Image 1 (cartoon, rainbow, N blue to C red):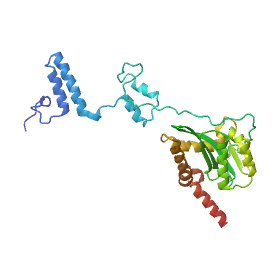
Image 2: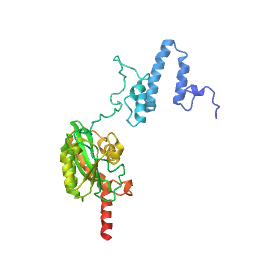
Image 3: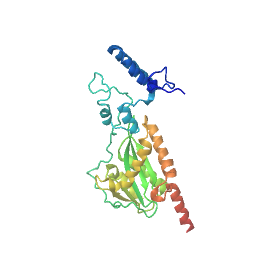
Image 4: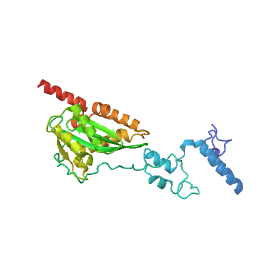
Length: 301
C-alpha cells in the first residue's frame, strides 16, 4: 500500500476519503492564492454551502432556545432579553426581528369574586381550618371563582362535601349576584337532602351573606360558617379544588364561547372529578366510589 503523504487530506485528487472537513481545509488553503475580493466572495459562498449542508444542525436563535427550553411558557419579559444583542432589529424601536408566533406568556387578568356587604354581619368561623368531617353531609365548603372566555367572564360557584371531596352543587353564570350562590345551594339540597346541623362554610362574599341564601340554609336546619377576610387558608379546600380545576381544564385551552366552557366544566365536575379522579385524602379512591363503599359498610353493620 502506497504511503500517504501529509498533504493528502488537503488535496481532493490525492485523498482517498473526501470529507467536509477536508473540503473546508482545502478551501482555506485555496483562498490564500486569491485576491482579497475573490477571497471574501469565496468565503461568503462557503458559508452558504455550510449552512445548507448542516441544515437543522445549526444552533437555533436565542429566542427559540429560550422558548423550547421552557416548553413554550417563557415569560414575556424573558423573550426580549433573549433577543437582545443576538438578532437583527428592524427600524421600529424595540422591535426584534424574530418570528411572531414566539411571544412570551403573560399573567392572566384576575377578577375579584369576593366582595363583602358592609350592611350584613358575617357568620363566625366554625371550621377553624379543620376540614375533617365525621360523615357525609356534615360539612359543605362553598366558594366562587371566575372562568375567562372570549365572550367575557363566567363565574362558577361550587359546593364540596368535605367528607368524600365530592362536588354536590354548582352553578355557572355571567354575573356575581346572589342568585349564583343560591342556585348552587339549591342544587345541593335537592340532590343530597342533608340532615339538620349541616355546616355551610364559605367566604364573606355578599352572595353568602344575603338574606335569600341565609333563608334557604336555615330552612333546612343548616348553620352558616364564614372564613376571615383576606385569608385564603380558612377556605383552603375550595381554593385547592379551584387550582386543580384550572390546571386540568380551564387553563388548558382557550374558550371561544361560553357554551363550550360550560360543557367542558360540567363534564369535568360530573364525570372526571367525581367519578374518575382519585383523591389521596381518601386512600386514592374516587369520591363516588368512596361514598358507595361507606354506604355498603353501614348497611352491613
